[in-house]
Length: 89
Image (cartoon, rainbow, N blue to C red; front, side, top):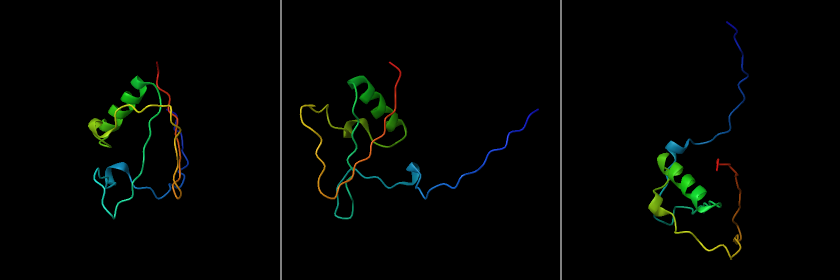
């Protein structure tokens, strides 16, 4: 039997998703974070249901599909990051 050793890299100070306090109702002590999912309707729905499975958000909390003729606008003081994942077709 062959044994393989792995090097442990330091992990950033990140709160696991299960420990996050996420809310659907705005209050003065809560900061809104806008989450976008951009892709085909089928792919977007797949991601929404996957996030629901991980208890991130209920599917009904998402808006209906939005028209795509308007560019995304970032407000002063807001930052944007994106992540691309690929789903099989």
